[in-house]
Amino acid sequence: MSSATPTSARVRRLPVVGALRLGRPSDVWFKPALSVVAAVAPPSLLLMTLGRLDLAPYTMAGSLCALYAHNRPYAARAKVLAWVILGMLGGLAVALVSASLTRNAVVLVTVGALLAAVQKAVCDATRVGPPAHVILTFVSSAALFVPQTPGQVPGHLALAAAAGVWAWLVGMAPAPLRPHGPERRATAQALNAAAAYAETARGGEEGGAGARSAAYAAVHAAWQTLLAVRNRPSTTRRALERLVIRAEVALAAPADADPARLSSWARAVRGTGRIPRTGDPRREEDGLRREEDGLRPDGVGSRPDGAGPCRTDGGARLDDDSLRRDGDLLRERDELVGVAAERAVAPRPLWSRLGPLAPVAVRSALGCALAGYASLALGAERPYWALVTAASLYQANITLTWSRAVQRVVGNLVGVLLFAAVAPVAQLGPLALVLCILACNFGAEALIGRNYWLGSVCVTPLALLVTELPGYQPTGELVTGRVVDTLVGALVGFVAAVAVTNRRAGRRVERALTTVDRAREHAARVAADPSSTPAALEAARRGLAAAVVDLRATADAAAGEWWQRALPQERVVLAEQAAHRTLAATVRRRGLLPDPGTTSTYTYTEGASP
Picture 1 (cartoon, one colour):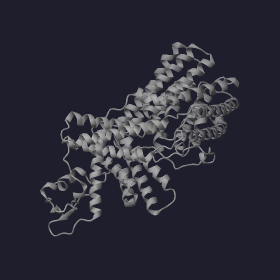
Picture 2 (tube, helix red, strand yellow):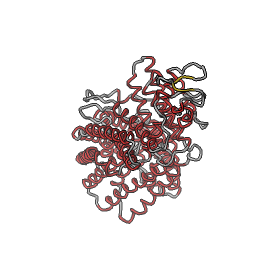
Picture 3 (cartoon, rainbow, N blue to C red):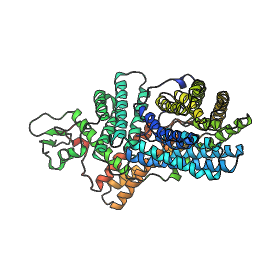
Picture 4 (cartoon, helix red, strand yellow):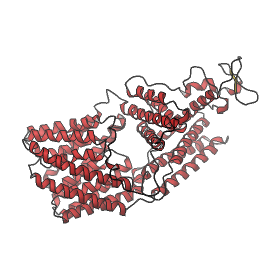
């Protein structure tokens, strides 16, 4: 259940054409696109009716929060959206107060760079995204260069807060119709990815490594979605967990997996009907675990020589496929118990997650500040676009950062051409301007899933149109300034990424793996010791569960970072799965579940789903 993907030991090349290649659109591309339009339109049209369209940039700051948390279950989405809105208001407040106290551009750039670093680190630590910190940085950086007085700040913050509340309502609106929609989508994606990998592996086709990495990433994303709500899981969520475990089984043994069945489960999950059953391990216990009697209720007993199961009613002995299916069911039950134990562990404190991100924060602060200063040196009056460009570049490693720089430059250059074509239409009147802004919002979210540069083609005219809300400005000056700031921000930002790398990430993963191994061995010894007290079992269980959570967080932070050794992806995945089985053993040892015995004596119960 790790999103860690294989990485080369060294960065060999910096792609250009590959960075611009278009991918498939997201399955739910229309959801964020429609959400942002629904969040932006009412406040903007209301201000236009009141003749105060100059205040729309503040309401748009709150409305853009509707872009977040579309992959979260609704219970978790409510909290995430609330925190995003508060974070947006906090950054906006700092920016507005700074703008009201000084007009020194160097000071304002410094404040913007520090805000960008904090926003980047917090979003990475809390895994908020997409679009992560970029929207928050855009809002706060733009506000730094808007003329402001201290008396105006409360009113402008109130407008942003009101629009943020509306964005929260828009984000939560689908909940009554599809209460488990995000969980279903994530599970379906995991099943489809596992089916694709199984098909590739069985056919011996090329690209197996890529399909395997994509499948692991999809399974990990599904677990993140299912575990986002930490309360007692519902029947629906528990059924989805079983399906994700089936996807994991397919990754472990693709030759034995049935791609057609995985795909059919994925299709069934996407709808609103009943979730397909894969077999409930708890239900099979009664028919599979009574080894001590020598005779099962269904007529199956153990062979006297202990070699395996046999039938006492004259039937044929169960074959290896049945035994393997039984083992899968029991492993599934163990995984479910392990997942439940992991869910019970409280998340790590935010401050402890921020520590490993110090290099990322330094990189962001340095790159954004230098980009802003360079833009000022070239004569820019509002260098926030260079600052935002630098802030948007920083990805997991140098190669990805370079790719994002290429995408940002190409997208912005094409975007300014689009703005030059749209500007005459937008200047026809306030309504035309608002409609152009809404169209750009929709286009950006509809296209950005295919490639970042394609979305930037709409983001650039959107940002330029927003600057015209207080009053129209010469198109030529806006285009020229944006092109220069884009090139400066991309160049300086990339240099800062090369200068500040996170080379300690690999050592942290190794330490986390060692911690999990030790915690698992300790928990296994405690569970096997008949004299272990309940307190010792509980302490061992909680220690192991906490170590698993920490391993996943550390592996996520290190995935793709530019360091000398490749990330040990398979060790991370195997360590997590082994830890879940050990967690299940500690739970059984406490008597919360019956001990099923050994898998060699399990038999297949008629009617159980394999």
